[in-house]
Length: 149
Image (cartoon, rainbow, N blue to C red; front, side, top):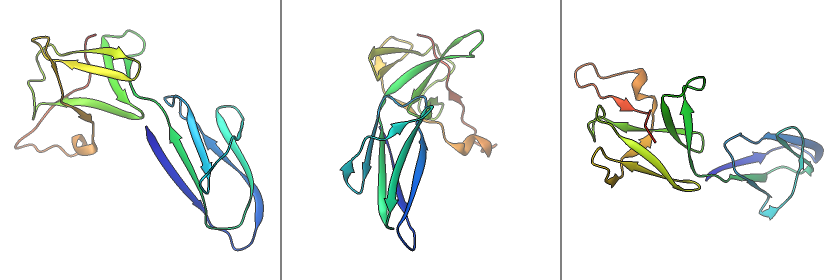
């Protein structure tokens, strides 16, 4: 699950709408306005929250969804990438031999299991960060983000 909070500040009460995009990966969205659950109108993949804002009110969104497998590359898949919400997960060469034939399988909706080359379930997937943009050339590590099912 992913969580977002937005606080609206205004000098005087004003009525206007917030148009909030619901990402494709989200499997259901919960919305609260200052702690009260509300049901906004949907408009083309976006939630419209019309309200008279008084200032300091908080909108909280909770996006449901678990891990999922995404075929990659999209035109002619060679494997699957693992995502948890908006985050791509990878296996780092700092914790495993990434050149070996790692596999993943979906055990239930929202649950993915990483399988070592031996077939044994293991942990080790972590969000792919931005450290690959500035690699350590003296001690490089690699990431596996494409797996076989």
